[in-house]
Length: 439
Image 1 (cartoon, rainbow, N blue to C red):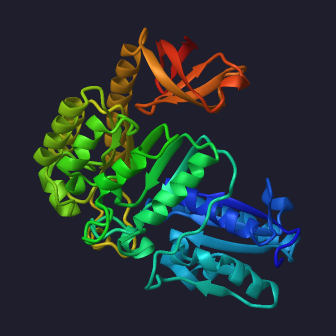
Image 2: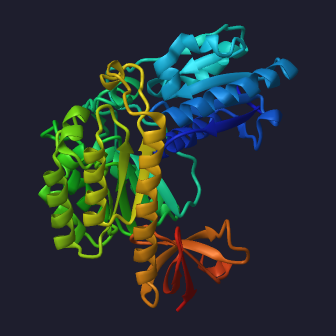
């Protein structure tokens, strides 16, 4: 095999989609004879899988490239490549940041990774493969073996063109994977011992919306729900404009679909939402939340929100805070706006002072911490169904699992219950997790 005996190290930045891409790249290289490495110093191939959706992970990628430049000087035979969204966005311009870089590979070309490595290994200089190909959905296999939780890509790309978002440029237009392939992969994972499936897509509930010959997203959920042996189904990320009544009702009648919905709202002001080109209003979002909680009163709702978007006034920000108080999210992923090159919003003045952005972000996060802690403490005394995932990273001699509402629970237990669904009595609600005892 081309990579026989060679070791590969992958550093991943960004979201679950990037983590899943890294899993697929490692599986692809493993099938060509490569082995995983635990650190870049011991690797023959080093991949930095990047994210350009927000400024912070992009800057982290540039930072690690500087360290890798020194490593490359110490070990000239090491092959160093940049993959992911920054690779797609910057392309050959990345050689300005790291002249010793061997290749650049966009998300639409990761299936060509063995071919690119072979080209570099046989004397190729500065290989750059970006862009998106026409034709069938290209899907890479995951490594075999028992995993309690597994991600499955059902679609890629996005057609929404929110004015702040780089995803359509770096991930391409929406493309849905054939449902027969999705179902076959999930059946295979369940046969290997997987209990929980996370369906992935940049706009996951728009799955196959333009293909009348395919299953709709709710129909796909129902088919997955019927697979023998599956315990739990989740999906991310949803767009409010594509959350249909049929999908909402699925939370009420599909037993395996977990009571958790990640539904980004981004801002609580209609004026800001319009400039963002979100194509939903504050009222639309609140109506969806109300309907979700009519179907499942204890549904956990999490979201993404941004502060400091161009033109956001103090009154606009107050409306975001008010919406948070009305909804009472279980958790919130919050960010300061940063211009992304190539987006419409990047052409506008970034007119909110950094200090104002920071103040708004801190105020928002304080409020959300209060809400999250209050909701976690309310669970004390309740018995929850928990899927045991492994040993706790932060609590010695304990194991950890996840409730159907996506809360982490730490409790005493042994290896005999790993990968099993157990009943746990919640004894304490903390800021970011729960403590419990096995029933």
